[in-house]
Structure formats: C-alpha cells, structure tokens
Length: 156
Image (cartoon, rainbow, N blue to C red):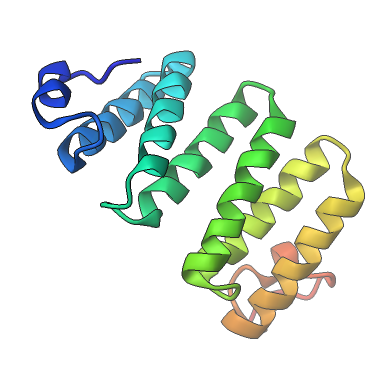
C-alpha cells in the first residue's frame, strides 16, 4: 500500500519522518473507515519502515504493533494478534519499564486475547502479573481493582 501523498514519499524518501507520519495518519484513516485489509497492509508497510529507521524512536513502532494486533484480532486472527502484542510488550518493557501503566495494560490485553483462544495457562500468567504490578504501582484502591482483582471486593 502506498501512502496517500506519494509525491511526498518520492520527494523526501519513504523513511523520512514526514512520509512516515503521513503513512501513519493514512493508516489510521483507513482503520476509521473500516477498510481493515488496506489498513493492515499499510500498517505492515509502516512497521517495516519504522524498523529500518531510528529517527522517530520506539514509541510509534510500539503503537503500530498494538494497532496491528487489534486489526488482526478484529479479523479473527487472534493467535497472530497475540504474537504482535507479545512483541509490543517486550518493547514496552524495554522502553517504559515493567511497571509502566501502559505495559501493565498490555499484560491485561494479552490475558484477554489468550483467553479468547483458550490458552488458559498463558492468560492466567499474564493476568496474575498484571494484577500484581497494578496493585503495587497503582495501589490497592485504584478504581479498576474490582474488575481485575482475584477477589470481588469493591473499589473504594
């Protein structure tokens, strides 16, 4: 999939920051329009380009991998989505750390996706780590505790 502003990519190069941001915005628009096959192809192209360049940093690559995981899951390709989420989790751990709320959220997402394909042991492991980290980092009385906690005590 070529970016919408092909002239920009030809003028500046496909790995330029401007061309990458244009592609990212184009892929988001395709996703919003429900054109998931085209969005998937565009995000996959973008992922490859981001892996070739370090001019933007890892945040956008992590975001692209998470969106790819969502699109794959929406298409019923949950095992592939889990692979992308695990890749993003490893990068989030390296970039943000194990106790970052976004890293913890990725653990919850992985747990849910593993449950969806009956990978119960993996799901349990992800959920347990997420709850332990969330309790430690966010505190035991965080608003979402009752949703993820092993107990049914209400959040206070």
